[in-house]
Image (cartoon, rainbow, N blue to C red; front, top):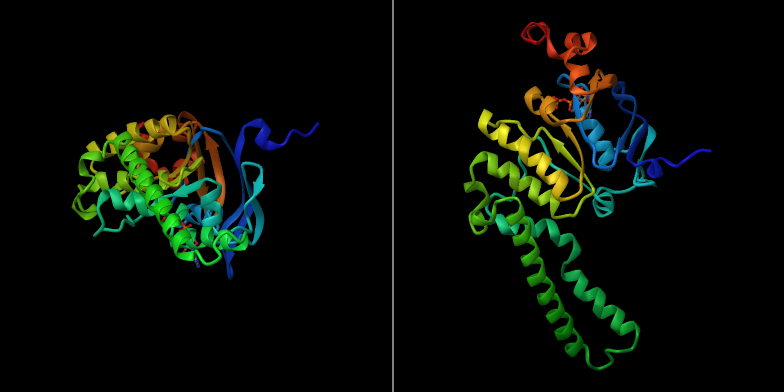
Length: 285
Ligand SMILES: Nc1ncnc2c1ncn2[C@@H]1O[C@H](COP(=O)(O)OP(=O)(O)OP(=O)(O)O)[C@@H](O)[C@H]1O
């Protein structure tokens, strides 16, 4: 009997995905299944196709071939915001915070997809359709506005709780740009968490960090996986981080998967050493 993947605990199935840009095949028949709560590393040389895999998963690119199944749903044709709503969040290689906004407001903006002024109008329209607002539009507008304000204050509370969980609450009112680099990276992750994801994609979270910051990041990633019941897929060039925290590592080169396994298996894999880790790495082992 064929048991559906999501019943086997598979949260994400990247099903034979190919992504070509004209004649350039950035991702070539990528096939992989990620289990719920797994922490998986995606590594490989520059230009191997790692970020393109993220862009296909998050709906930025529609693949040339193949599909992406998330939690039993074919998300291939969906728009990025729809994919976010289903529970996939990501961070980017270069930090993309609203640098002039406060730390709290950066998290609030991410939550905001659940609440905007259109919500007020939507509620009002529903009341109008149901004939409840005849001649009393001003009243219903005020009522919905009050509801909006209440919701906003609840969201502020939730944003603060999130900052507390990740240890950024003391910076709540600081400008995002004034945070030390490592904390800005944390805030980016907090912003992704504000959308309540089941799957978190981290694109080079340790980029630009000093050894102490990347050491802390390793603990932090493991902590959020447990605390927020996440599955995490991360791209990273810092081998200490990847080998230190990932339960499984997938290695790409020229768009294809060339190896897959535990850090023990990957660190001594001849193909991986040749394509990516290098001879110096081999001698240092
Ligand atoms: N929109 C695009 N149009 C054309 N080519 C693209 C596009 N996006 C990516 N590519 C190409 O696809 C290949 C894979 O790029 P990608 O960014 O996925 O690699 P990567 O493994 O993430 O590299 P890095 O580690 O440097 O971030 C590269 O040759 C890149 O130039």
